[in-house]
Image (cartoon, rainbow, N blue to C red; front, side, top):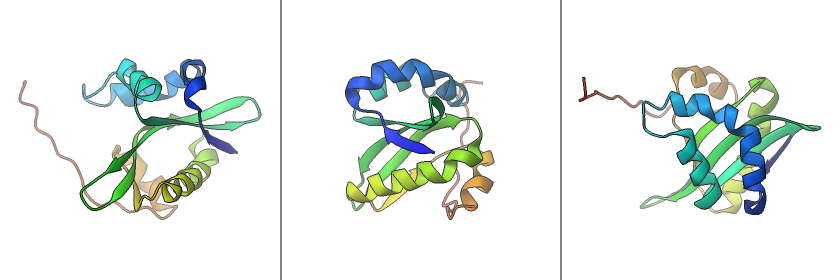
Length: 138
C-alpha cells in the first residue's frame, strides 16, 4: 500500500477521483460542511489531501490540516474515507505519523463516528473525549 500527500498542483486532478469517498463523511457531518467546502479546503487552503493506493487504484483519501493550539501543534484529520479499511488504516496512520513528526506535531487527532473506535483502538489510538450536540432548530 502506498500513501502520499497529493502535491498542490495535482489536487484538482485527483480530487474528482476521490470525491466519492468523502461525500459520505460530508453527508454525516450534520450540516457542518458540504463536499464542495471540503474540495475548496484541499484545493485552496492549507489542508493536505492524502491518498492510499495499490497499483492504479485509489482505495482511500483523507483531508488533514496542521493546527497550532496554544501549547501544542496537531495534525487534525477532518475527513477520511475509503474501501477495505484493513488494507490502508495502518499505512495511512504511519504516513501521517511521519508527516506530523516532521512538521513538529505532538499528536494526530480525528473526530469521528462511533464506528471508528474499534479499528483505531486496534492500532493504538485512544478515545479522549466525546462530542455532544443539541439541535436548536427543531
